[in-house]
Picture (cartoon, rainbow, N blue to C red):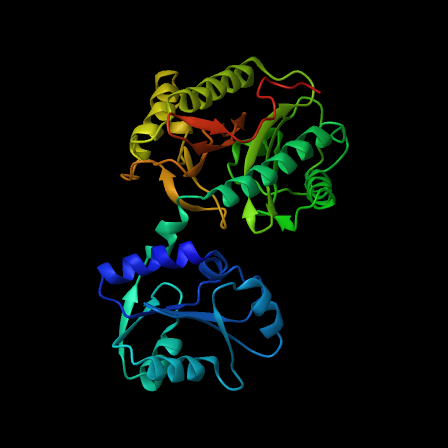
Amino acid sequence: MIQRVENLRSIMKEQELSSFLITNPYNLRYLTGFTGTTGVALITLTEAFFITDFRYTEQAATQCQGYKIVKNTGPIFETVADLVASEKVTNLAFEESVVSFKEYANLEMLIEADLIPISGEIEELREIKDETEIETIKKACQIADAAFEHILTFIKPGVTEIQVANELDFFMRSKGASGVSFDTIVASGLRSAMPHGVASDKVIEMGDMITIDFGCYYEGYVSDMTRTISLGEPSDQLREIYQIVKEAQEKVLEVAKPGMTGIELDAVARDYITEKGYGPEFGHSTGHGIGLEIHEGPNVSKAAEKAFVPGNVITDEPGIYVPGVGGVRIEDDMLVTENGVERLTQSPKELIIL
């Protein structure tokens, strides 16, 4: 955590910021290690304070290494104001996308230092994962892989999509996950043409193509994987779609490397699917970053100009969705390395027919 704080201080010096108030819970966890629900951090160029109430002071003392723990007995921003005054800082940066207008008005009333709205600086630091983060994400991916292997033994005619989703969720928790990354998607039959078809009470039937998009939280970090399988023989068109998506997805894995932009990598899958005649049926981005959040930078999309660097963890998830027919999506998590990428989710991608 100390190195992460120093990285933030480098940004503060560049932007002539003398203090930074952290309120975003994901950024708090990243910079402090705190896993509780109440607290803020105040970082100056020389000190780091974590402010919380009596319920979390003991926990913070254990988790927030390198921080001075300050207990607030009244409103937390009043304690922040006292620290700002005692540290004699000239300005206070705050996360403009997190602080509400009411909170801003409160800060403005309490604090004499200039308030500086900041957006994205800490999130950009989070895009490059260190070794500890990478190992944690790998474990979350291993749990997802084990869950996919398990669910293949559970799916049969007559079970509902929500039963499949619940079985996945419970299994991942049994393997050490603290929760799911997002509401598990199980979309079968014609519903597989819905990219975000969250599990419903639809009964799964023979002949259904089934798209399963799921992941878990492990020690604060996520996994995100999609596989599409068939219960019984799929139609010729769905077989064709599956093969196109698989090939597009693997082309992304083959060419991804540092220095490529999200636009360039997105085009690898998009151009191939378009060449095969299904361009209009691929409507979403090819991928996104993952970490403490299920969607964070960097992105793999038609608008993502940023180049990838080693330490980025991104998804590779092209899909084709044909209303009235069905759809296919295949997704892996991958780590950008010095020379290319390392695939973190290892489940098979050949079409599985149950």
